[in-house]
Amino acid sequence: MPPAHPFDDDKLREECGVFGLIGSADAANFVALGLHALQHRGQEAGGIVSYEPSQGFNSARRFGYVRDNFTSQSLMQTLPGSLAIGHVRYSTSGSKGPTQIRDVQPFFGEFSMGGAAIAHNGNITNADALRRELIERGSIFQSSSDSECIIHLMARSLQRDIPSRMEDALRRVEGAFSVVAMTRTKLIGVRDPLGVRPLVLGRVGDAWALASETCALDIIGAEYVREIEPGEMVVINEKDGVQSHRPFRPQRPRFCIFEHVYFSRPDSIIGSRSVYETRRQIGVELAKEAPVDADLVCPVPDSGTPAAIGFAHQSGIPYGMGIVRNQYMGRTFIEPTEQIRNMGVRLKLNVNRALIEGKRVILVDDSVVRGTTSRKIKEMILDAGAAEVHFRIASPPTAWPCFYGVDTPQREKLLAATMSEDEMREHLQVDSLRFISLDGLYRAVGEAKGRDAASPQYCDACFSGEYPVEPSDQIEKGFQLKTAAE
Ligand code: SF4
Image (cartoon, rainbow, N blue to C red; front, side):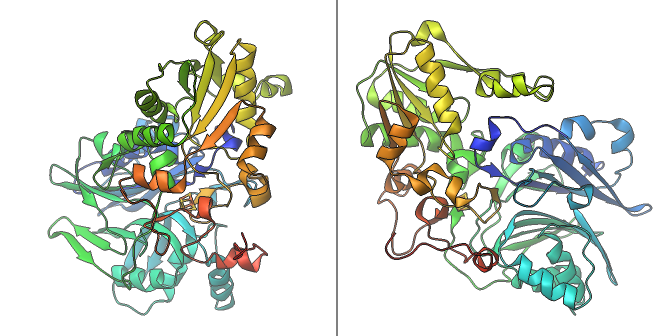
């Protein structure tokens, strides 16, 4: 299993990526490539299920990177067929305990009309209540994953085909889900009514693909056809192609705005917008909202880079790679000793002293979560002789946890939950600290008039505390929603 990097606990982490393909021999090989392109969405474990008529369903689930498991010819030969789905997963240890191999998706269920496998990106906010009910009625759970509820709900449905059973099951589920599923003959893709997590459709030759992001279509040479729309279910078979269903009551979509800021790869397209261009535009907005007199704009690599380019362009202040990322920071050096672990950020990032010395530096980062990394980076920059350090952050203060498929620390661990912007500046001991406003972020993603406060166009709960779906399991455990006074 890849070790947690000391840098990682100061970022929000997307928990999953999904991919599926129908209509090409050796579909599992395409799925492995797609999952490799989605590895940034989950590095802890991955799994693939395939179907071939003479051999039935086959599956492989492994801890570790896709490239270390699903490149082996002997393993891939066990996954034959022209229909396959896969999943990559990020460790949620800490919040739900260490992952067991039985928690690794796709999950499989055998029904009277045949088998089905599902891979889920997102988080079911009423999973605890559903699990209790299902166990009371006789379901036997194999994993600790919320996603397994979908299989058990499907088993209880009285519908006569698997897509209809899946519709039944998903109508009981609250929260965020982008699901890729398969039967013996069909590839199925579904997005929750708010469309919180992404899912796209692609075409390569005669085959169809479903993926969390368009970068996973690019790697297999597939053409991006369109997004699966919020609340849509597509059922794809080799003979009839794509059939679209609308199983849910229509609602105003609330896509995760943080996908634009950080989670998605910069070479992906969301809607019709390039993620890279949106991030560059965030930097432009940030420079308009929070200008500062300085000599150099530096990104905190890699995720701060497009916003830093936009900031430099708008402000006219030169852009430079004042911090260089060690691209080959892998597993080798991290685990052995406490002393090496304590070197923390320095293992991954190094300061380009020749560029920094004597300069007033603007550091552009994507977010501040606990603030531990920001403090260390500031120290590195000052050690290298910077005259001043100014932080500019490409997202609003992250003051609330996400319950829709992103691993977030508890609320009290989020720096912005307990401190004002001024207090955070003092805590980080920097010359200035500014975050982009929520309105500025909305403008950067293409909403010219900013955020519609009466009916927000996106999910922005981790910034605003306004949850589009009530996190009922969390409330039961004592989580306090935002009060009118906050
Ligand atoms: S709470 Fe934040 S990270 Fe979670 S879905 Fe909403 S915008 Fe995205």
